[in-house]
Image (tube, rainbow, N blue to C red; front, side, top):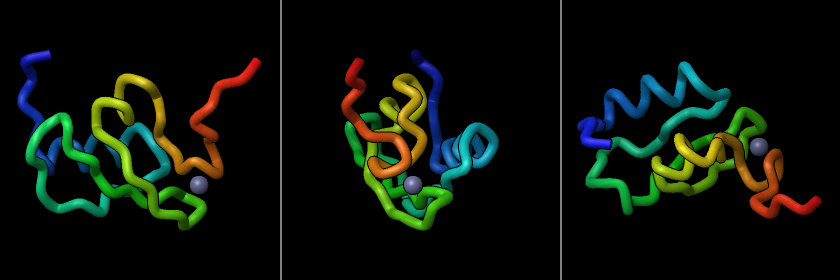
Length: 69
Ligand SMILES: [Zn+2]
């Protein structure tokens, strides 16, 4: 939780742990929405917390936000 994330580390994490790419070049904190590019070519915005902790690592088309059962 106290781990300091830099834009470089986030980019690395994104590339290693997903098919998406990070387009944002500056990181200001957990509440900031970062811009990603999904492997399908769609850009999407998400906070890094959601991306990492909630496993939301694709755009809303490939991975719809609602988890209905
Ligand atoms: Zn997608």
